[in-house]
Length: 314
Image (cartoon, rainbow, N blue to C red; front, side, top):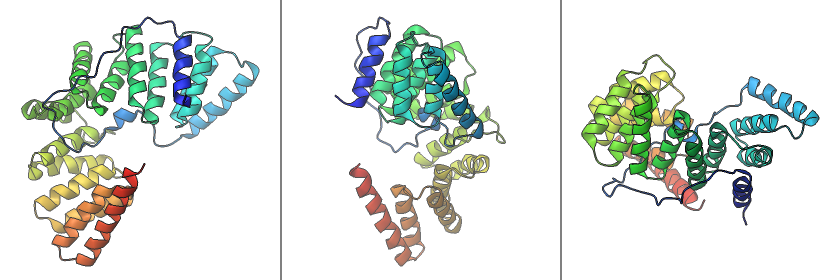
């Protein structure tokens, strides 16, 4: 039995929630094959550990040394461990905490997000569906569930979940944006474009969230409309200059509109930010080859091939 299986069995034993039989995944028969950029909402994780989170970690450890069986402290520390990216340690602590009291829907959502960190979407979906049983109108739970369905290409279920969120909160920007992604994945481009444009229109071009603009630009680029894609992609780069996918897609859009110098520059920046992405190396190789820089192009093709090979072995 694997460690993840053991954790799941312990949690099941400690949570007295009656569940219906698991349903089979539903996918749309017309779902298209396309390379999607995974929205960060899927992972629901922070890329850095803040100073305040480190202090919280120390404070909770000190409190637990005095009250080792406090479920509130155990659940709180499990959350901190998940936010620090320590998914296995977090799951072990959630299992221990669940031995003292039944987890809430939000706590089960956090359990699920630990499994997302481990790329175990089946277990993540299981616990999110359990959390939904507890609190059917919890939009955080529903949103994470929709994202996990989407990540597993269970588009029909993802669509229903995002629509459920919008029925509760018609102005939920993330749900509308992700509904657009679902429409795109199921070959409903007109609905997809409307949802993505609406999400981008309601987003702040000077705000913290680049994804509505990246998703709209990516949609337009994938549908052979690079000229239209450039503006939202430039906005995404402006909002988050350290976003590798933003630079990669902007580079591809510029190249498609014959702006070779700008396109190459954007792809080079994307590689600087994410040097392990084989597709970006390949795209840069193509751009360099078209620009007559055959030696550099071959170097990028070689790097791309090696990265693809290493990823296939993981």
